[in-house]
Amino acid sequence: MRSAFVALMVIGLLLSSIKAEADPGCCSSQGGVAGCERDVGRLMCRDGNYSPTCECEKRNPFIIKDGKLTMPEGTVVNSYRDGWVCKRGYQQVGEACQQIIVPANASLDFAGHRWACNRGFQRIEDECTPVTAPQNAALEDTGNGWECHQGYQRIGDECAKVNIPDNASLDYTGHRWKCNQGYQRIEDECVKVNIPDNALLDYSGHRWECNQGYQRIGDECVKVYIPDKATLDYTRHQWECKRGYREVGNECIGIKVPTNASLDKWGHNWRCNRGYKSQGDKCVDVIVPENASLDFSGNNWRCNSGFCRSDDRCVPCQR
Image 1 (tube, rainbow, N blue to C red):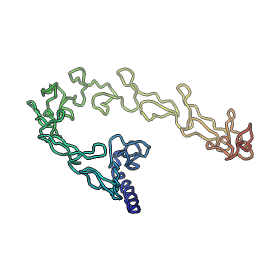
Image 2: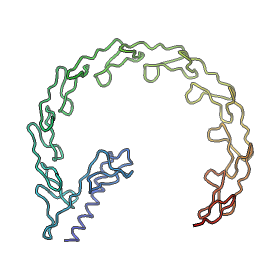
Image 3: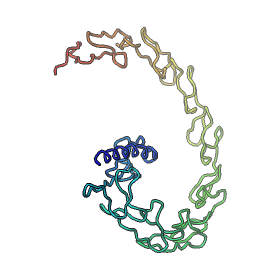
Image 4: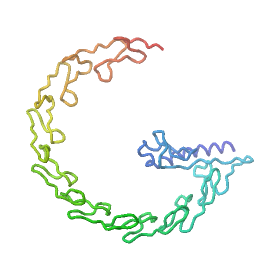
């Protein structure tokens, strides 16, 4: 009997891992699902925390009575075969299963351990009362509430017609309005966007931005002054020096790269090559002492494992 019980436990743990992996969305912002914490009935995420939204099957171990595995009334063997769960129509209360009392105009939900109001009814405390939809409204998708028709907005318990001004239309919700492209909202009106020379509508369609090569100054677009050895930057509205040059005032001055150095990642400064370090405007050798090696940067040294730095040497670490 003991060996059979242990086998059931092992199978249960394997099935738990498989079932948890089937619900990756439960821990989408926490690195994914790690498994089911059966003792508390919660999915464990890879960051070590419980899923904020998802549950899994809680472990309710068999009751050993007179050497036999038994279960409380109103239960069945769980899907892991290592304990019990409440039957459909029952809910767990402590270590027992209590029959669910389903009120009028309600039915068991898909899991079978809670009840939900039928379509056209809403839950108020422990009863299901009819949903009373006002004029210009209909049942929402869940069927347990109402929403206004397209072109109407909810104000209290009524649906009022959306007042759409000139040069506007309903937005994606169908219950608000937005200005048409080329117009911007000013209080409750849509005013035409005044686009200056050398500008165009931006991605929103309700503002303007300068064309490439121009920058905004007040309400105008002024041509960007690009000095020699410069080009437009990634914004296309300002300038930056070309690779091998650095900005000095409103000019681009050539960079003097010393021996044993090269341009850095951005190309507007220099850095010493691996095995050399900066000393003023030069690159000098990195003197690596015994029991040391170049560090990650390549411009300094660090002691090898088991050795600690003492001034300019590496000596055995004291334990």
